[in-house]
Image (tube, rainbow over all chains, first blue to last red; front, top):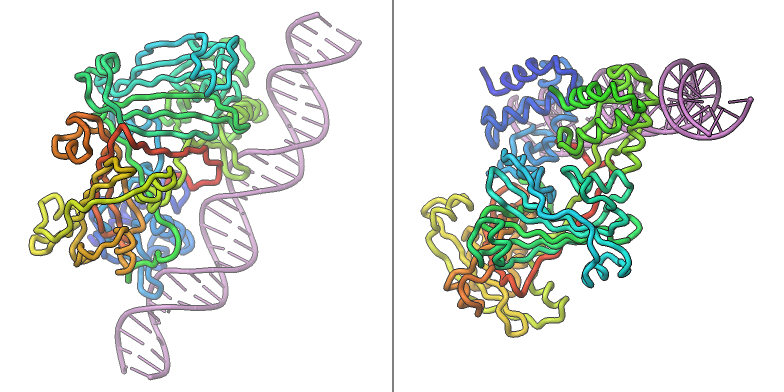
Length: 259
Length: 259
DNA sequence: GGCTATTGGTATTTTATTGGTATTATCCCG
DNA sequence: CGGGATAATACCAATAAAATACCAATAGCC
């Protein structure tokens, strides 16, 4: 059975799903590539061949193929054909996003849980008054938790918010942002600072590592659409067990595709 | 059980409560999002589908959905569907910006200079052969330098490239990327990994800090348009004197949903 | 070298499905 | 009795999915 036939076989299997045709086809091709049925440099059948064999329109085939070209999985050459892109390593698209802790860990197949270290209303510290724009008569809501993946403590998150946007810290569910969303106080922008620090005694004990071990420290200030500061967060991640991955892209001229 | 079914299951559970229908539905959807049963970018069933399955009017469904849209939890696109709102995403940062140590420091008003630690052609290590796709007969170009701002050593950068793209490491001027650009080997994409590490003896001595101090470690793999790996870099920054700032923002609707 | 079949590239249109809106009926509570 | 919240009906408008027809570049043959 030829590699091309494998695509059609997979396509027939999924033909009951009710999903859009181009999505089914895209998935079939993607799988054929991922399983190595067709390797880098191999040619796909022509768009017209795929269309007639699968009994769908060529434009629909094209839509599927185009998506994969945009994703860097396939390469097309006018007048020549469509080929599997000759790359050695494909980057998951999710890497381009700075994901939340829970999402990120779930993607790595880890079970995640949190332990509350602190949840309550306090008189604000001078720092908090300044960053959050509070007066000395207002209160600050502090939320701190230990994040645990597969029974290994990975991070300590400490957030400070104005009590006016989070009057009842005890009522937070699993997501702080979801709780803010229901009251219409959703942040739309944030500035984040990543640095390295040696863990202090208290934090090291919580993270179950010796004091002095390197940790990633992330400070974040979140803003509402109005520009008002809504949240200040300082998190510390165990340096040996967690790291941040980012994908960068250069845009502009010179993006010609290799012959 | 599909994510959509989860919503209906929760809805049935609460159907005895006597609360208004749209409140029950709103809560069901909210919980499904908070628990991660449906993640950012995922589509909800159409309003008509929800209405018929839950056996309530579409306007009632709409009332519930609208509340969540106002709260920023969901996003609707006319003619397209209802989706879970995207979370904060990283603002695109140009490759040159992150790598250009010189520029970054100049912006902070510091004088910058570099000291070459190593520049030459070597037989590749197994790691380098694998990442760069070299055979054992090819050579690898290694470039290492100590970056100094205001007479304080701040970072050690070690890069490895195929000798075919950088035949003469000695000829590099101030910018590695400029040297690559002139030979047509400009990277268009890079994947970068940020983590924390305790500095070893050698690196600590170069950076003039005690051994064991926390450092930011950045590993980067750069790709050409063809997908070929062109460069592998590992840099260590002094954690106490340098940090990375990233701006995040909430992207609006209209982005491509998971290819 | 030039012709031609074959390849990908593009514009336009049709149709089904989606969210958006105005109007009306109903219930509860003061 | 009225006012607000709740819910249902019927219709409008935007979008995406898919098909048709045609344009343009490449490869390969003569």
